[in-house]
Amino acid sequence: MSLSLEKLAFEHDHESQTDEEKYAEIAQVIESYKDKEGSLIMVLHAAQEIYGYLPPELQEFIARKMNIPVSEIHGVVSFYSFFSTQKKGKHTIRMCQGTACYVRGGQKVVDAIKRNLNVEVGCTTEDGQFTFEIVRCIGACGLAPAIMIDDDVYKQVTPAKLKGILSLYEDAEENIEGGADA
Ligand code: FES
Image (cartoon, rainbow, N blue to C red; front, side, top):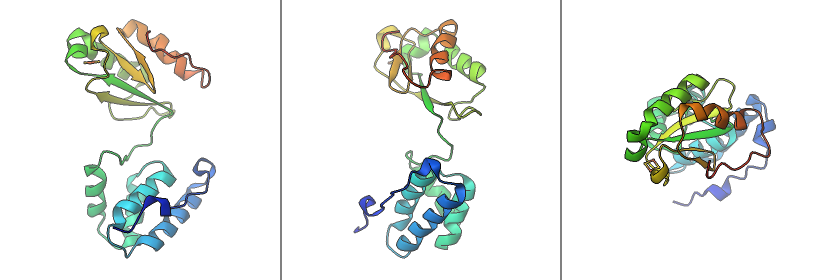
């Protein structure tokens, strides 16, 4: 396949673009790729890069512009884990639900995260602060249960400790102390 991501020269700061500008940029990308083999994946990558994620209305827009059924787009987006239909939060919480974490009370921490942040697994809080994901192991089994927030690992987490940990991210956007051995 001769298409490559390098060809997609995204020079804009997408954060500061309006939705209209983002859609216009995506339309341009579609225009340059639409009749080429394998273009759908490239377009979806580009669209996610520009828009941040692939909500249903954007998938419909792409389907219309590319003249393909929206079901084909849904199929591709749900097949590949690197495509997301949810807007990612500023921080990503990854709760380990591997065996060690599970048997040492991981589920209680999962429930506490859901309760504290009013968020479901795989979703983002309404304020856009946190995305909550479940993972299988983060290599801290000896001190389970463990969670990761962005690149920081917190061990032996309990529902009681959780609030303090989350507060580091809720307020202080800069200078967060690494929690590697908390
Ligand atoms: S099972 Fe949770 S860190 Fe390994």
